Image 1: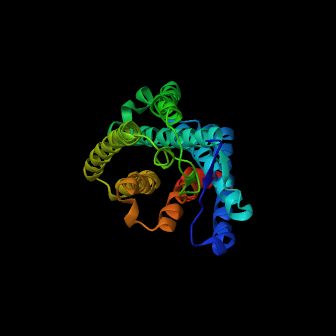
Image 2: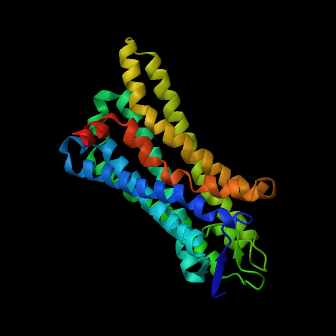
Image 3: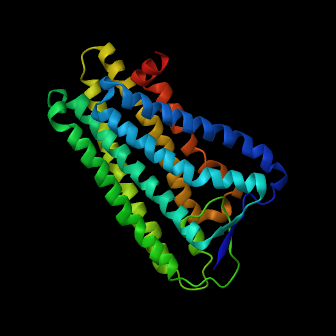
Length: 293
């Protein structure tokens, strides 16, 4: 098809302006927050450590994710600009899923960073080097590209002969595939199973890392040391919980979509990308101290 139509939030057209105000404010806050995080990490030599390099990567991925979805959503709410070309829709789908997949692996890398720092502190400098952090970032990009790029060809092969209305504020793989008038079993198998398996693997490895971290914390003799170690992980745990709860909610919506109110899904799907800089900006002590200075 030449174009698709993004459906916004059916039944709430009169409230679009009011709904857009908090999203616009949070998006601007996300741009500012991520920008501050990147600026502080870039300019402060004391923060040129693997932990903060991963944090910078996460901020970049979050900027890509939010900028891929929120501006188009605001244009839809403000100017009813729901039309999007097929190529633009595929591009938005790619960068949406690509940045999401990259964030997942970066969160895994951050969990491993905390695991080595708390469980094997003498080996931290040898294991988590700047070179290792950069290579991890490149692997995250390569893995995300290899997982998501085939989705473009899986969608291009499909015929679209019915309506072209996507029931969302942005283009996603399965949201486009459901509009095809052909067998989409390959899209369902690949589009859900392969990325889902990669995310599940990340979750399992992160969970194992934090179980080992908790066991190490309980063995610390000092209560002060335990609290200090816990505080270094708390912001990461908050982001992990928010990220994966909403990720699994989005995946399960394709299985139980009729039972979830449409406006609830759209609001939750756009929530995480605007929340990350607030969590890390407030919860990461070193970042907070540098910003205050």
